[in-house]
Length: 49
Image (cartoon, rainbow, N blue to C red; front, side, top):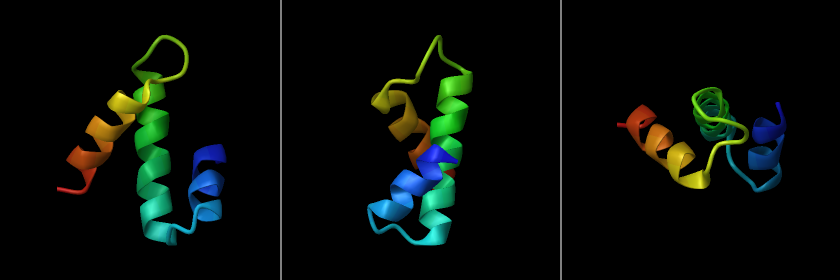
């Protein structure tokens, strides 16, 4: 939810905000602690192919 709200506050549309929040949550699920931005970016790029 926090990632979605952060994306919306940065002016993203709903679809992009949802994709970014899923990438952030998924990257964190596969990490120890909070995911690094690089991991989030890799997952996001895979999602939007």
